Length: 235
Length: 103
Image (cartoon, rainbow over all chains, first blue to last red; front, side, top):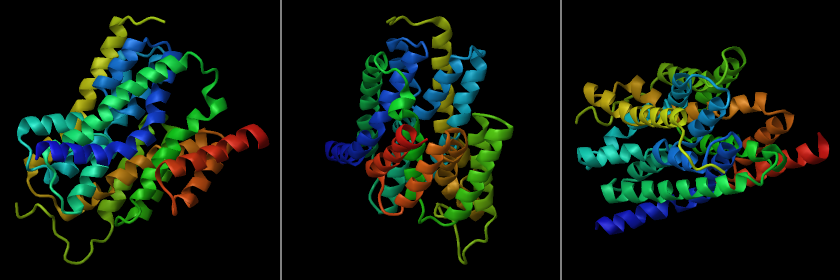
């Protein structure tokens, strides 16, 4: 039962390992190029385990800023997890508190997306399933980081092989995957404009939180469909 | 290559890890306090993934140079038909072709 669920979770995440692998390698390569040791880079992948924020952290560390500024920037990039963990609360009622704590440690963009998909398709979100889903990406992430560190020593200019464009295109694909959701177009327009304005006038990494909040406010202010009520309101 | 752990780097890594875990569990703890989700809050929550991920895309069109902007527009159109790794390969190929042969 547990092992079947675990395998089902692994199967779900397997294609995502392929699309995440360039980013694990990218982080390892960039980390080494910014003066991190292999041990430090793999440790960061193991305890932070959030690609975009790891890349931001490495970039800022290189600029010799105080530690709290770098940590705050990592927090800003990862702020979206607060909203993910609130959104999946209604889907993980089968898990006990320890299982929930472990599940939250493994919470990433694709982990969140797969839990939403599992719940919306009416299938149970069990501990075995979320563990397979999470471990299935966690272990490869550290292995890929290590591979990237080793490769990083050989890459001259990451731009010449186009490493820098992979990340935004990957995120664009994820955004397109949500296009059937209500309010998708106004949200994407609001977040695009706000994040572009913020990156120009406020600076990175605040464009992430500012742009996200703009889109969320637009969604909250849009007219509600008739007869809307919350799924957990009765519970 | 060094495999040592320097104190200032460890502080950033472990501090970043604690900050990240707080974001991962924080939303759950907040939502459990309020029990019910008002419809407008739920509409906001449903918009979270698209809103946040958009902010990791749109600014790159401004800061990544013209080839990145063009590759993103092509990917936006291609994203209506394909997804995942196929989309990444298309966008990457456009950016690389422009970077090395056109611009």
